[in-house]
Image 1 (cartoon, each protein chain N blue to C red):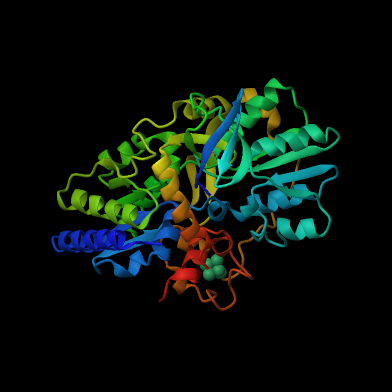
Image 2: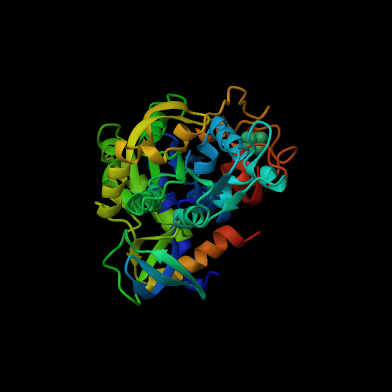
Length: 72
Length: 361
Ligand code: SF4
């Protein structure tokens, strides 16, 4: 449950941002990482960005998330 | 999918671990605290591929699993009240209470809604001013700051019909309780990755220094976990327990200070009951004075004296690492992911669910 999903920040409006989760766009809060900018990558947990990450790492995570939780 | 370079690297890591493990005098016990680590370790088959003198034990890191049945029953009771909307993360829906689950209540017409974020629950409260909207607050330090921020917003916007059940737990007190458990004989911890993103790796210092446990904050890929295990081995063999971060791509020593600040403002620590482990002092979070009025337990009186763990379920023992799921007579017979008896089989990161999917006895 403590897992963070990687997302790319598309646009920012005040304390919120539109984040792209591999094609799915969602409104998230950026209150916990207020210095985040458009085009940055972050880990998102429970609708909140919790940490900035690099683009390379965001791509790595997508792989293991799929493996850990989707492989039947 | 792994390419050849990845496969080479994994092989190299196993070689390193095997070489290092030869230097061990006794068998060692390492605990992975986080449920996602349990899932990853089972998926990659790491447990079975390690040298026989390294034992990996799954710990109490699945929030749904460690929530005691009284608290599950409490949510179910509140869902029965008039004019209430229960909002929760999806993980809680199928967890069996003594007589029912939230999923069953929803099927019977109770207003139970799955939300992705506590902010969504707050929006539901705003859209339904005539209802009391209760958010089920389970999780560790990773999740609590999000709920704290939602409450801060609710206070600022003077929202009167939003409440939370604060079942949040913090990770260090049970780790210390398990270190002190003479039956377990732990040597080190694979420390959780995303809890540590919030708290920083510094929270493990007392465990390394006072309790002399090796601690490595580890990521979730196969290579991460193996590197973490190798780093733990080196600490144990050199008898220099310390806090190291393998997962530097996300975790720092100090963590997310903004999240730590909001946690302090909104919550205070309280004694809390962990399924299997029992009451651990100062291991849970309740609302601070300033936020007290959002406390659902102060609004609804419910009696859960009847609460009883499911008969025959060894979830509690599994959660403190005392037994493996294979040791439960109901495992794979009466208890399956489709028909779970205990919480450890329901949650996608529960130890029994991980073993059911991937491990062979
Ligand atoms: S297999 Fe089922 S009944 Fe047995 S301990 Fe796990 S959750 Fe409980």
